[in-house]
Length: 466
Ligand code: SF4
Image (cartoon, rainbow, N blue to C red; front, top):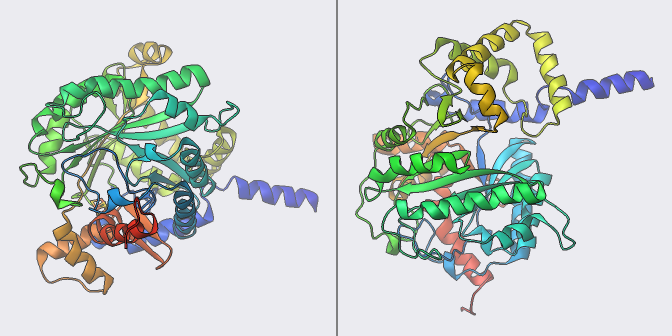
């Protein structure tokens, strides 16, 4: 009896995909609009999509133009107890609706305005709910703050791994040391300093990190994107994400000349900076009009794609991956358990081993062969590097489309229909347990944030307001 029970437990523990993950992925796939169900689509096959918090700490201490925060955001007090209660409530709902594992952003105003203990407690709460958290910041904080975040009052490390996205661009105002940058180049020093703080953390406390560099792109800095890519590549970040500006948030803070930026124009600049083609069409997250992602490795100074749509073998490997490994939790599973899960997949699909080996050989060839890869590996000059463009939509575009979706209606207007398609294929979700809804971030920022922040201003006033 005991043997049978142990065998059953072992089988359960080594299931390649958690049953709740499988159910959540199936639901996501079924909810995707037809146009998004392409062979490249990762949502519903492998990924459930990103998640983010809202209404937790809307305030920010920079004065950027443009600013996506609604006009009441800076009148809301940063309050640790409120943040923790909200994070817990939203993450519990995401866990229930979207399965036991996802990546989630601790996002609101500026995360470093939270006391380090509150910030750490929020990250630990997210992990308890199976979320791998990323803190979203303007990056203007000191190494002392970081140290207080990862260690407790006794100096013991409480966070062995942290993940941060630093938003830095020349449209931002009020950064210490450079309140009004005149060009992107003037910020390189600050970009490097930010990455260096985490390198020191690894050396001194053994705390690992994942760093993303985010940047808003407008006509004013589009022609500097290539230079930013080239400069940031060696700094130690693992992701570079560019967001063409959208008309969202506080319209008093829209002072820039503005026109809609073509996602192709931004991508062309990124390729120029990387000095190579950045193939993105082989793996899609949500809608092509919203997101582009090129996954790869930085080997020395050379970027090597993990998926190239021009390589037929890559498409075969991707299809096998989605079919047999889609939904496997690679990042959050202990190595031995992960090996057991992979062994079960291979036992069920032995031909995958051949495809995997052929793909590995092709990747090695792309990376310049063992002659180049081995020295880079021994010098620790190999790291993941993902390039992203995320194109939010204008509030004026989102509001009518979301209103109709809420009423279960599809618009007859092709522009509104296009927006509805994007919202239905959204890969960036926020939780509303009070209404039982999952909301695309565009709808959150365009429609819900202003009302939410007006309420928070009364709940958490900086000064008493009637
Ligand atoms: S948040 Fe908006 S732009 Fe981003 S994926 Fe969702 S609908 Fe598209």
